[in-house]
Length: 314
Image (cartoon, rainbow, N blue to C red; front, side, top):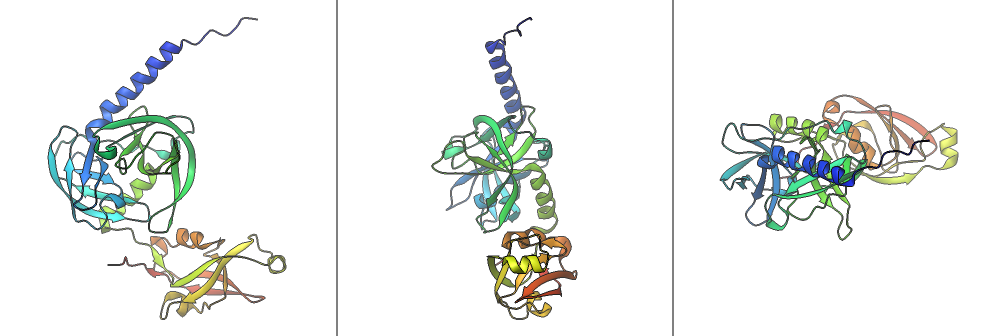
């Protein structure tokens, strides 16, 4: 039986290096440094030739403008068009046309183990490149706003403060994520908002300056459902949201939801915790009657709630 041919490590390393170099040549010119007076700096990247760029919400938090430094050293004034703290994404516009830009790829096509290349400005060191692999898909990460970000990419490409908002790209130069966080002091635990999430959020920010989400007016916490209740009502869930309080004149109050109720379903979807409610309160459900199923003591009730738009705090 013939032995398999030996792999030439030198050729593999050369191929890897060539792939990284090509990706940087494609994307590098589109990566920028953003500085906001009084709150430091971060990264971003142009995704259109006419000056639209993506960064993290926490990079430009509260600002209307930012100082933008291009890869070639040019400096411009960027206008913040909108930001979404719940996905840690923001859109900024700079003046110009025919600018170098990076293309948003399809994060749904990403596979664990493929090359991941991060570009940014950690600690002010401009145009720094780190490489690794996609370590995991579909992670959930808590945003600084408190909401859970879903479908987050995990990578071991090293990130440091200042990398935030920079692109995570494939060996072909397609952006598959927006670098958003690292776990300190752990090594090799970095996260990026998926490009498909960014595509949806960016379109909303360009249209409205923010992402519209629903609001019920409920304060609550995750609580276990007693086994006897679960069996009696043939529930597929073992936990739900225990309502602690209801805001006056809110959608929840109008629907008849009461403190101590257990919310077990919303619009036909199981509710196992507060994060589930956040996921379901999408723009499409604002202003539409939605069935909510609650357990009140041993009794099961279906109520109708009409979510309002959750207005951001000023």
